[in-house]
Length: 600
Image 1 (cartoon, helix red, strand yellow):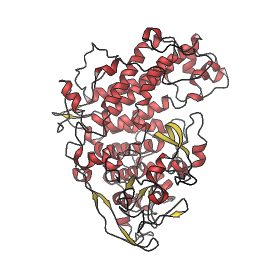
Image 2 (cartoon, one colour; image 1 turned 90 degrees about the vertical axis):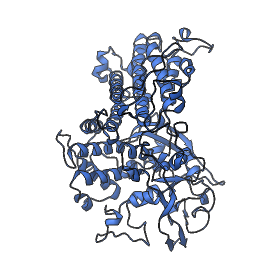
Image 3 (cartoon, rainbow, N blue to C red; image 1 turned 180 degrees about the horizontal axis):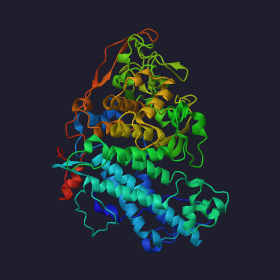
Image 4 (cartoon, rainbow, N blue to C red; image 1 turned 180 degrees about the vertical axis):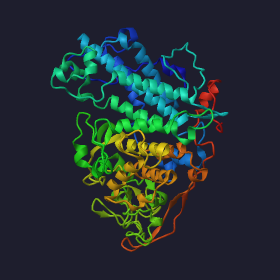
């Protein structure tokens, strides 16, 4: 990256309004020494960290997997998947963005004690404490994203990223080597520990002095109004102790995964990954059979279309499913981009037949193993008697959307009928609010929010790690639930069944692994997970290169004729593409910055 980015200060980006904070000065052209009394200086540095969180927006890297394709010819993920992924052209690149965010955070951490955030000394101290925790937490998150996107093997050693812990200046040595993967994980954990020391578990308003948490009493906070000023509910959405625990679960799962193990590889363990996920799940939530604390279907599965819950989001509040989210926005962007063309949409994200086939029957049996069960797959009626998540996430022929029957046998919604039509005979429905109208007459907008971390992800993290550590029903640590218990609860929520006869046939670790991975694929589809999951699992190259399949329909909407699945788009990944590259320009500039094997 250009070292000049490390000496640029962006001031006054985020404004937090309260009576006890200084008003910003009129003059904006100043250096650091003249901005220490302005709260916007420090807040602006932190904002640069928040702004660089990759999960702020939907990536739709699903179109670089076997789950989806897109009708956008210039899409970066589409180019990657079809043979144009290089160290110079990389839609998954996070290198410069995350490292520049880390620079802003390092600057904040080095200068925070010189800053002033409030006239009252106690309030000022508490602001510094909280914001220091935010900075450590954001730095840990950005480092995790660097590992996910750029860690890889170099001549038999697993490397991460260069570790910068102080502000870089024009005289700093930028030609640092990439640190060992385990050193990077250790650094992330250290930052998480530091963040948790400085942050409350959650932001909430207190009613009296007796309610001040003991750890803050030990820090000298004696007035609940001061606590509320700095750590009250209005700050929900900032880094918190609970969020840090969830991020630790994500890091531990990555570190334990198959792609990073081996000689000179990760020392992460599945036991640790299970432990950290369990800590999040057990943190102040009722977690007992049969639901184990899972949010109900409307909140935990179709959360994106739960208008009552979404419309009630105020003051940074979370839903019961959400650990951390970005802010709400009132728009119709997702619907405009992804509704089918007959509803004036652009039909951009097209689920594949591969994904559709992954949804089981309504009794939980895979469609190919349903013969002899109460719900037998009928190829002439392929969407009948299926897992309800299929029609909640994927728009299929004959479905009704906004009082319109979607006909994929003919007309604009048929395969390739126009540039905005589906390429697979399916349209994405997940993430879309169905009370949005994008037609020219009566167009409206609705509130949307982007989850950064959902509880369902953490449940699936636990199930995967616990199965790998102890098998389907193992619980040697006494958490009170096993991988089997969690997967049964997830499937029960989705299928609305008490008994799960197919799950009962799963008795060994390998079979449970297959089922857990499929449940993760379904529950988290279109949320930006599968691209990374396939790689950290180190699936066979043939699976990584599984072609994206689609079908063509003829006949009528009520009596469709389905073609056999055919290849819509091939996947072209080399055996080194389990690990993303370091940007080519960076390896040219810095001789100590080694590229991952295979990339040029």
